Length: 82
Image (tube, rainbow, N blue to C red; front, side, top):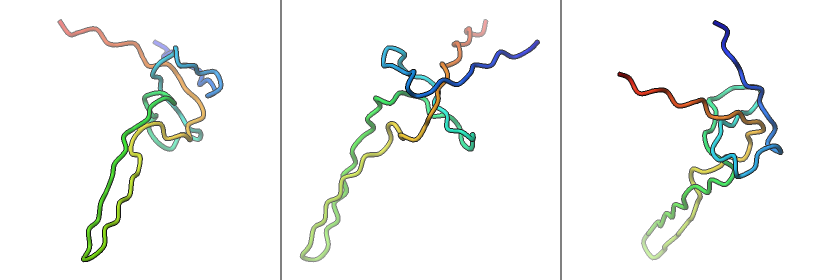
């Protein structure tokens, strides 16, 4: 049996009604990102307290990486085993 492969579509074709998809960067050097460009991630705040000093730094972790250029739909869900 021949495996059907999707053609990767450019980022400009994606719209929010499509929801989560697989995001690719070419050449493929890593696994795809699963999600959407609307993924915000979470803000992590770190506070360092030294003698007489306090430093706070906020950074966003997770969420849309921003460098993926193409997408394909998520594969169909498998049937539950009998």
